[in-house]
Length: 129
Image (cartoon, rainbow, N blue to C red):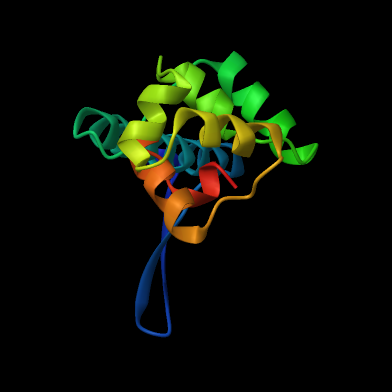
């Protein structure tokens, strides 16, 4: 940076430096980039600490489509986790047949059952509702 282009002024007892607009724009862009880097690093730390999960974009798209079409996402998460209905049912305290009925929309499942299913799938309840 060329300091001879900078003009220093004092206004109301405060010191200011006037810079060319292009330099000011560059500084704003650098500040935005630093914020974005900080956000990315925070996400990376959360993933490494197991507080956040990454999954393929194709799976995210399936989840989004199911949510917007009113579809059941339990089956998607169950498949993604590599679980059968029976395994999920045992982990949630219900039968595999009951899991199948919930996935098919023939049963809604109590709040407690849905909470247990979410826990067994290691997701929040809003991820399956």
